[in-house]
Structure formats: C-alpha cells, structure tokens
Image (cartoon, rainbow, N blue to C red; front, side, top):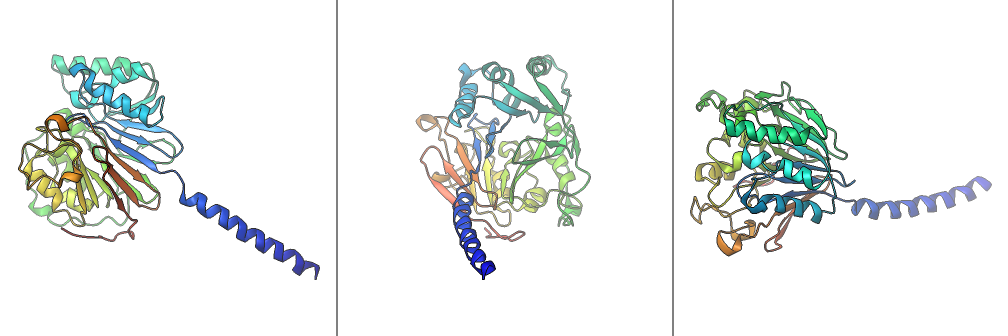
Length: 354
C-alpha cells in the first residue's frame, strides 16, 4: 500500500513537469538571419539562440559609409555588441570592403577566410592588405572544404574554399544529378570568385546554403556526377543572380523551398539566372533585396517579396529569416512588414512545384 501511495504523487509530478517543459520548448529562441541591403554586395548576419553571431561578408566600402552603417546598425538592432565570427567569402570590394571598418567599430572574435588573394593588381593588393591588417588583431581561421566554423547552436560546414570542394557528400547516399552529361562549361574563371568560401549552415533540420560568388564551372563540381550538398530549405542566390553563376544542375538539385537574392537595382537580378531559380523543383517563393531594373515586372517577384525599390523606396531595408530547429521558419520584409510562415516539411519531401 505504501508503494502505491508513493507512485501517484510521482505520476502527478511527471504530468506537471511535462506541462512546464512543453511551453518552454515551443518558445525556444530561433536562429535569426538578416540579409542586409548592401546594394548588390553581400552582408548576411546570423544570430544564434544563445546569442553568438556570424557575419558573412561586409558590403561596399566608401560611399559615405552607406554599407558599413547599414551593417553595424543591423548588428546593434539585433542586440549585439560584438561579432564572434566574420567570414569573408572572397576578396572583392562588395564582400570584404568593410571588414576593417567594422572591426574598428566593434570587437571581432575571429576572421574566417580561404587564405591569400589570387588577384595581383594594385587595387586587389591594397584591398587585401587592409583586410589582413584588421585580421591580425584577432583570431584567424584559415578554412578548407570539410572544416567547421565552431559557432554555438549551428553546424557550419565549409563546402568550397580556395578553388577546392568537399570530397564526400554531406548526406548519404548522394543522389546522382540528372543532366550532368550535357553540362557545357563556361570560360575558366581565374578570379577570386572561383575561390569563394561556400558554406552549408544547419540549425536542427533547417538548412541554408551560401556559396558567395562561386562561378559556373565550380558549381558543377558540387553537382556532378552526384549532388554533394543534398537539399536545403533556403538558397541564397549565388553571385547576386548574375548569369556567370546559378548553374541549373546545382540549383535544381538543392530543391530549395525559398530563394533569397542579394541583388541591387542594376547589380545582379539577370533574367536567365532568375528563371533558373524559379524553375527549381519545390520552390515556393523568391524573395529579393531589390527590384531588378535589369528585367521587367513579369520577371521580378510580386511586390510584397521585394525589400527595396529604386528611388524613394530604397532605404536599405533588410529581409529577416527566423528559423526553428524543427525546420520551420518565417521570412519578413522589413519594408512593409509582410511575413510568411513556412511550416516544417517531412525530410526529403518536395512540398510544391512551380
């Protein structure tokens, strides 16, 4: 009898504990990602549930401090006083241009890059030397494919760096990519673009891929003969939606539910590249940092999915994504506060097709 009387309070206690735990799990902090408008460059800020941060690229330098002010303003709006990691995909003005300026305004825990620049003209050397000087004051992570960025809460896998790619698929078995035999290469790219540090970033079941400005032939190495990256929820359009990148073999193999394009009004956002993204199996929506003046209204996304318009409507609005570790996420347009919810989908399931 004494045993029975002891079990009942334990059962009641278990029920009460479940009731307390469930709301906590439901209100767990998300991963927040800010796609900052740097007018056709890149600056993407990740803020993890535990408050650690990673900025991928920094926008254009100069221009009355336009981009550095937007980046630092967003970092502060996110409640941060420092950056834990600053990842530089490659050494072009629109990606690394403000690294030193940001480091002068706040502490940076570690710089992440692929090593020395391969470009040797005077402007390229000056750009890299300014970055290297800022980098010398902090920790430096020289990454190669397969390495991890050790940021809390996230699984950040480097998939390309310095012209190399991962040798093994991220998920097995790797699916063969249809159409590889018909691949037509473009002219070999000897610039920093082909050296881009690309990463696949996972938060639980949520996955996003960012390949910097990786170009066509290097994208093919990730897709053929087998898809080395698997599928993702979000695809940040490679190279701002320019036709030198966005290989359909890779974009369609990724099967993103959502694409986000970090274009400017006349930088990126080219018709062919945009149509390749739109034809990707399972794509639900295509968000743009800018209305593209390079194409007509019929190629641009509906207005609610575009953060900035040329003229008075271009105020540096960002797009914000908040992801949960079950794979669900929301995307918000800072210009009009339009928000769309994307529920978690079953692994490997294509939810819709256009």
